[in-house]
Image (cartoon, rainbow, N blue to C red; front, side, top):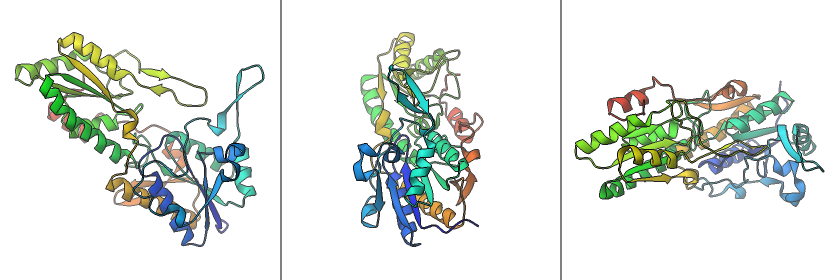
Length: 368
């Protein structure tokens, strides 16, 4: 039987997402109601790995006052980072070269030395893969699925996704009027990395004419045909939604940069698609990149509720003796799934899913 919990730590890793603060609040209040002490690790694991940068605030005590009035706030009161994977932490040597080191032992020792019994790790696939390794090395861990990309397996949805899609849809609504006024083609690039969930859901909801996603390599001549068809019908503007990880048939994803210790940065596909469509159609074309606007702002009602449910469920899981699991939405309930299963593969858009079929029935082009 698992030892009784007295102290827990919370961290938020990877990109920020609306709903992080709501999760933190739910964990803290649920823990306090069980008589536990709650602590927050600053900026992923940096509060443990780089204490000199934080002084006495690398790990902070969290009480009721710490989490009062934060449910509706975007961002995270703990800070986050997508740099410096502690399993392959980049260290610059004297000769200027970079060596990657495994610093997971420092994290586990740092938590044990502070009398912390368990960690609630809030993050996406990268952050939860780190949490899984810490669990395998002896730490008691519960994962909470966070990503606007919705690409974590074994959960119907991740918090942050609904807010991102809602904002993207609102932007598409605005772009319709300016596109129609100028008879332009508007190409809208959205986040999502190698999964097309944001582009697909926002594109359908925002009545896009074409949606380009990573799961379906595109042929732009097919999109140009759709635009020209609209022109013949007197609809002299078009909206094209492009996921940042989309690529042409036989092509590659657009990468802005790649640094040691972090994921490659995608971006630029919107400009490429806009340039090529202008040449193919002869129409004035503009590219709009929503980028980090999708990460910011207050969480939607759905994301607030699911974040609070996930946070409370994480504490219940610890109270029940669970470890090495992720809380996951399996409507209408929140269940527990092994971290190993949640992180073993990326959840991509199934080509036969109802949303794809709906888009095709509506006449939306996928460039295929």
